Image 1 (spheres, rainbow, N blue to C red):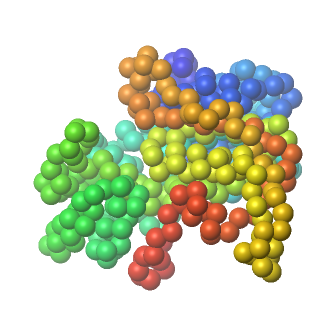
Image 2: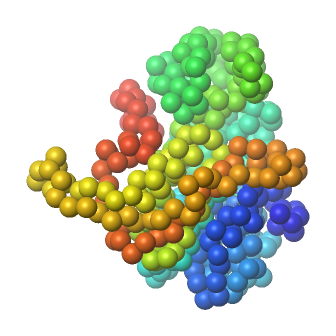
Image 3: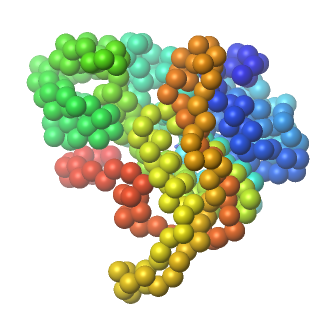
Length: 346
Ligand SMILES: C[S@@+](CC[C@H](N)C(=O)[O-])C[C@H]1O[C@@H](n2cnc3c(N)ncnc32)[C@H](O)[C@@H]1O
């Protein structure tokens, strides 16, 4: 990925050429970049063809950074500060009912991670914040200082796959009784002490718990499931979907969604759900069974790429399908039962 795309924002896009190629941009077509960030993917799409891009990001910092580069593309680029789960509604507002490609590059950007004040990373001290949109009512500080021990343990286990989730939650509750946990540095030191070295993987002991808090605060998996379903609704027949993920929870969700949507499904009657009444044809066809991974050169140049996986699929003509909680569970969207206090509060 050329420096020109990253210089002004400090984010080196991962698998950009591969993701953009999966969308196969054509003149006159319209694409959604669901996660604009520094605009690396958006700009590559706009440079590859005389196309239009609707770029989403829920972070006001991404909007601000875009002022430096967006003007050049004039009316070919529309930037929307909104969560991508609301893609269908947002596109309706600009009179777009169908697009030819949707790309998602999930998680956080380097700009968000490296800015201590955003509170995303244990590597940079700052206030515990972690809200991508910078405005939701619940931030990491409130969560850690107010949530019940069991809720914290569940969050760490479900969204961080942290085996010592209960130990970490217990220690957080113990420490906050004498002083509030305010900063990423405080949390990271506490976790280092109580969790110790993380086995053979050699990751920092705080890694999984920071990931879990970030995913929970930003409802990242809920957004991803809704975003994939929105893409199914908004993509024209033969439209392309490409998603780049950075950890196993995300990748499992994308993989299962595409596997299920690319197979013939059996539909039950609304009145007798257990009775199969018809076959539903696939809404997607898989571009490849296996994900595309970054090259050794890309990983050497950008270590953040090491866990990335790209999955792509092509939309068929079958109309988008309504889903219920059962489908969401089957693709790996966690359905935790938190205490009423946390439910009402988030
Ligand atoms: C990995 S970065 C994308 C980088 C981008 N592809 C580039 O080339 O610079 C992910 C971006 O997506 C945004 N984001 C994550 N989840 C989002 C969501 N549900 N809705 C809108 N934006 C989201 C984040 O704020 C962040 O800026």
